[in-house]
Length: 114
Figure 1: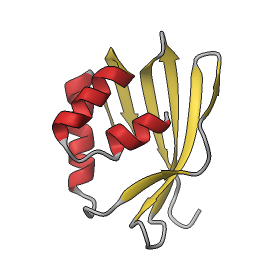
Figure 2: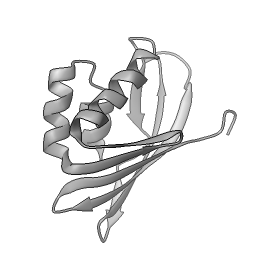
Figure 3: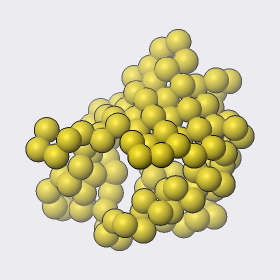
Figure 4: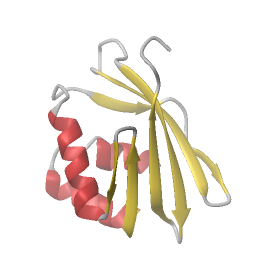
């Protein structure tokens, strides 16, 4: 899950991002964001492209602590913001893992001020 945060959500190069998605996600994977769900590698990459397009170039996602998981489910708490600036958003990713790859990823955003 740490690789997903860094190599997918932290990667602004689309070619490197899709390579990472193909390595880390099942072909029929689903990304569930608070406002939509997308299916498959290309759609996941496009969703991340759109997300990163709304953020400043120096915005970074940082794990709060190492991911924790068992029995095919993992979670990773994270923060995001400028590298030397204040945290702009916090959240939690919950993944269902099958055969060593992400089958579904649920992204939870903490309410502002939480």
